[in-house]
Amino acid sequence: MAGFLSDSEFEKFSTLIYNESGIHFSSTNRTILESRLKERLRAASLEQVSTYYQLILQNREELRILLDSVTTNLTRFFRNAAHFAALENYVIPHFIRYKAKKNSNHLRLWCAGCSTGEEPYSLAIVLKEKLPSHFSVEITGSDLSLKSLMTAQEGFYQETRIGGVPPNYLSKYFEKKHDGYQIKADIKSLVKFDYHNLKNDSGLRNVDLVFCRNVMIYFDAESQKAAVTRFWEVMNEHSFLFIGHSESLFGMETSFEFVKTEWATFYRKWRDSPGD
Image (tube, rainbow, N blue to C red; front, side):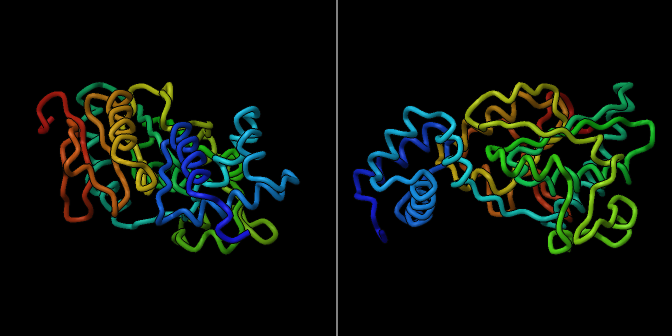
């Protein structure tokens, strides 16, 4: 079945996926789409690609499964250490000062495209360690893949998945169970997970920190701009945006301000003096 999609079929599937999710398939990653379609045809016991196309037009659940299958779920704990160094040394100290001025002790975070949960749990651990005890934290992890979200919600990871966790954090915030580790309740309680398509409004508001790393690389320019605009709309007047190290807002019409620190680069949203 190699190369089984005709050009017109590829165009139909890629257009539908783009319209539903913002994920962009071009000729360079066409083989990924073909591979996922082969898997779904086998699972549905179908022979013809055209029959499967009609199925996903009529069956929203099968369309959801297809979108899940084309989503890349590569992640790990404390991925890109430079970002976490910037979080500890720049962002968190800023929040401590700023929230004190606002007489607030609450932080709201959004991990968009959280995959199997390693990123929001990593953030929860750092905030638990570095914030004063009187602070409260609310982290939402969202993803297009329900399968990944189920793993995230369970919070259990095989030993091969916890390599990035510092030993002191592993002993403090994980419980060894059989062939893996379970996130402890005090960290799990800080994180909730939700199914969300970045093409739609998340329903979140007053978010202080957004992590959306290595997600928008699968979007075209229009979808990237739409996603970044939605981030701006849900974020607080003093807030930060982290995107993947290979991603950039350069050349995009946006109000976010670029921040370069000795640890990492990221973006911020100010509506008053940056010195506040």
